[in-house]
Length: 397
Ligand SMILES: *Cc1c(COP(=O)(O)O)cnc(C)c1O
Image (cartoon, rainbow, N blue to C red; front, side, top):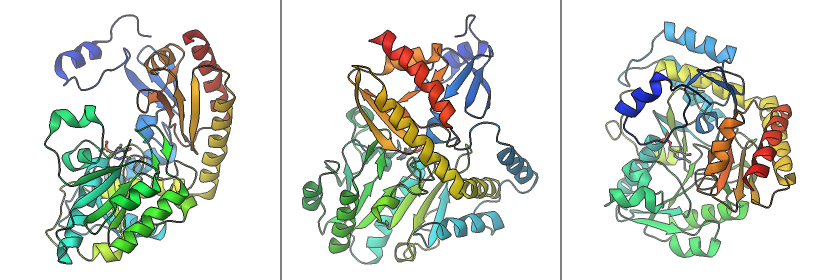
């Protein structure tokens, strides 16, 4: 822990909007799974910039790709054709259910776009009374107005009302409740195949299959928000793969460009054919630099050996966490390198103790520690984590 206060901390306290409570050290560089602070202290990183830094820190191929791309075109706007945007879209379509892609700059923006695409689709079909969107308890879809409206958490929503109307919140993984809520008025159903912020809660395969069936029967669109759980995080490129279900729309962001900001909306032709020039737009989205980098990251993650490592290291992580012998542990959930450990207590003291022990950890809800490391994590990294975590849990309990 920093002994004398770094000047950046005072500057932050004086000049940054205080929307975040930060620990008292300043990060300066990283290598692989490890971040270092200004005092040279090392932290093993189980957060990865909130499930973003899939290739870890200092990846030579990523750095070279960014440097080469930076020497070319950085930004052109969406008024013009560029090769990298088209090539990334083609690759995403090749690797997914999608026929077409719209690029933007963040997760929330991708969710907003998916909402607009849904509205546009039904409007074009002269079915504009269909404006309800079904989401689920513990869902997280972002902080902008549309996305926030689909994030049923009082602390996030209440100070910002009124929100977008027509949102129906249904109990997660409850097929009967979804059956009752999805009607002729439903424009879309949005779900994270594995919930992230809400506590690492996987939707059952049966639940995703039922949602697909209800949407098809009743003319609603199915949106998968794979911003956190997609792109290899759960050990398959898309976290919905085990269910065999494909959506009409899918949002991506977090890891897609290896730490640079990007978002994407993947769509079937059935939906995309209703989006016409002028319907939606973005100044920065899908620029040549960012899409060059994203194509590099996507290709790395889609390699079978890369995904195999996520599955193996993830299974080992889950197994080791389940073996931890602490009365504080309630449940270990998740798949691949997206694992949550629910405790019987608020996890804040564990996260704070983590800093002392050289661990970066993040919560998912008040009582769950979320493990979303760089996807390059190895079993030996898990061993280091478990040794430190065991010591912390013993001290706290
Ligand atoms: C992080 C996240 C978002 C919001 O992404 P931002 O880039 O922070 O706007 C939306 N949905 C899910 C599932 C997320 O994990």
